[in-house]
Length: 354
Ligand code: NAD
Ligand code: TYD
Image (cartoon, rainbow, N blue to C red):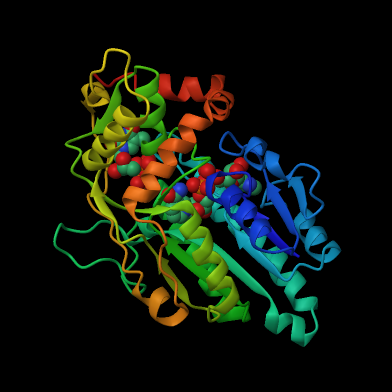
């Protein structure tokens, strides 16, 4: 049995679905169900005894300890986090509460449980911490991509809180010998992506006839990875990664934001043309930039390829087409998650943008 945290969010739910599609080892899924957690992502697992869902906070060390013991968990995969940079700018407290204090309490629960295991089970146990390339800070246009030894230079409350959690995980290995693994991944996209993030937001707004908001000059660069490739990387690291090691995960797909949005518009023009036959690109609007906006992220995933043989299966073209097709096929999912709270966020966040 493995225990996954944040398994009702975007990447966590994709991971749980893929995990149970690839094998029969059951999953205890602990998720607080914040605005970003959505049980509809897991609807296909209804009645599946291999999936046990528990609504709880990762900071509830007592409950986590009980679950670890009750289910004799052999590995924890920690996805739970506050994950949206813009929300971390307007309300950083939740990021410190979950990403820093929550991860600390989770580590304490895991350390206590792991300490009680007999030596073979201790040696086999893994705590895999899912983190982000944003902890490394920003890169100049020509600078080499982030490797695992790049210094930590987080620039947003989100990335600073994730960096803090990475440091705690590292310290629990160094000090207590806890068998940890850390993955630092670039921007994911794919099914079940909450429409506050660039790609699903633009798909949703395009179809609704709303503006497609591009921050600043739109020349910021991100590396994009299709979510199922990230899930495969995590499975591989869990299976064969060396304890205490960090693995960068990326798609070898650097794109400017405007390139990404233009690619979305072209696909939508092909797959769901506007009634007036004009391009969705006409809805693009340049808006006020994000404060402290990192200019470029780029991931060197060479270590993961060399040591564990992982490479992404999707190109950007194949992944983005699958993503647009998924959103077109699942309008009800989008309608369900874009509730009143979502509309309040969009109204307040984009109100000042022309
Ligand atoms: P998400 O916001 O979609 O999902 C987060 C999930 O965690 C939600 O289901 C939420 O309910 C749950 N959660 C939040 N606080 C919790 C708490 N205190 N206790 C229990 N559950 C809680 O995020 P995501 O995009 O799926 O990201 C998952 C992880 O991957 C995060 O740790 C994030 O930092 C990391 N990551 C994300 C990306 C990306 O592009 N989305 C890239 C690299 C790394
Ligand atoms: P986002 O999806 O929020 O991910 P992250 O900030 O973690 O990289 O944003 C991706 C890029 O898109 C980032 O450079 C900010 C930009 N962006 C916009 O230009 N407009 C938007 O409305 C949003 C949400 C993001």
